[in-house]
Length: 88
Image 1 (cartoon, rainbow, N blue to C red):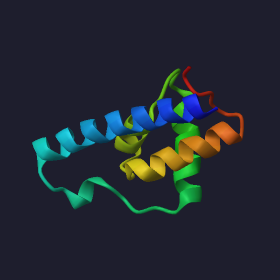
Image 2: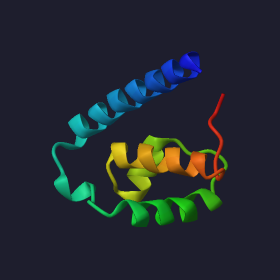
Image 3: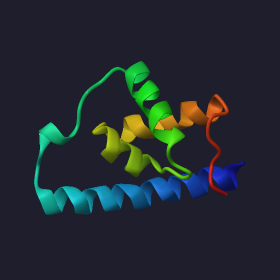
Image 4: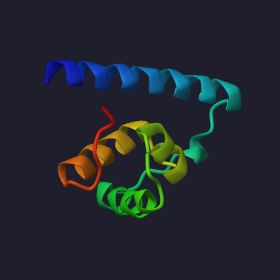
């Protein structure tokens, strides 16, 4: 279990570095990220994953224009609800 958490934390760190690179390339753009209620983000994510075999939190964040943190939390809830599986 601890190894899995460490692996997930590593992927999150990698994704955050990619996000920093993207933000550096486009500059500060507050209009790129929306603040929406968790339930709304969850429902949008459920719709989004229907058409995709694999999704990572960064892709979800970009596609839904939500923060990476919210996308990550939504994916954890989707996993807990049995709607997605973590890549091993």
